Amino acid sequence: MNIPENIKLLQKEIPGSVKLVAISKTKPVSDIMEAYFSGFTTFGENKVQELIKKQEDLPEDIEWHMVGHLQTNKVKYIAPFVNMIQSVDSLKLLKIIDKEAGKHNRIINCLLQLHIALEETKFGLSLNEVQEILESPDFKLLKNARIVGLMGMATFTSEEEVIRMEFKFLADYFKKLKKDYFPTDKKFKEISMGMSGDYKIAIEEGSTMIRVGSSIFGARTCSLSPTKTSQS
Ligand SMILES: *Cc1c(COP(=O)(O)O)cnc(C)c1O
Image (cartoon, rainbow, N blue to C red; front, top):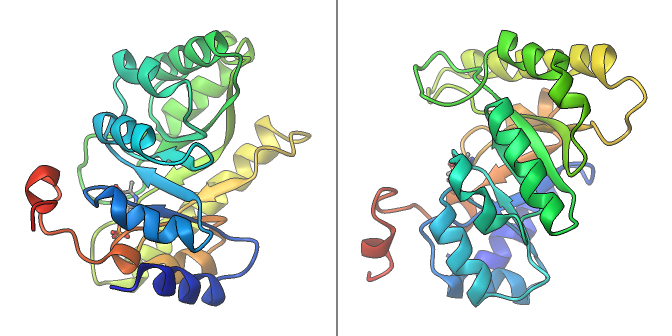
């Protein structure tokens, strides 16, 4: 795997308006440094412990995105440095992000993660839950957690039409929320959708941010056991 080359090819292929987040989960810091030395600085992780460790070991000017489920009691560990939390799935979590970011005088950009796939996964908000959050009085009091858009993951399937329909749904829903809740807020602009297998479809359907892991760093041998994979 030539990591810098993979990033360059991807960036050449996608429109300049689409931001690339390199998902480095389970990969060693040396892989991230290869990308970093080529001038690329935006990375995403899905586990708090791994994110903290890598942030400590790597240069300060890296922009870190949290893309996995986040427990409220772990927000404090990433609040000092994380740039974006893409996986906000409750009002409770949003309020704690706000509080912890406030302690460091920081703004943390957040995406509401929507459940758009057919699969029964544990995480992601339903449409009703999103609306409940945006209409709650607590939402209006947030100062340091800033909602800048939506994130979603399509069904893991080879049926392109299913994936396209889910991405289209997310993009349409984004437009509706923009109109109803953020009409004058220029910062509410991100639709994070698309991974290695489906980013092309996602971009065609309006993605502004893609999260690509294996197409950059190579396949992950076992996503459940990062310590084992780094020995290989
Ligand atoms: C792992 C992961 C990705 C990247 O997946 P690839 O298929 O390796 O590109 C994107 N988003 C989230 C939330 C992930 O957990």
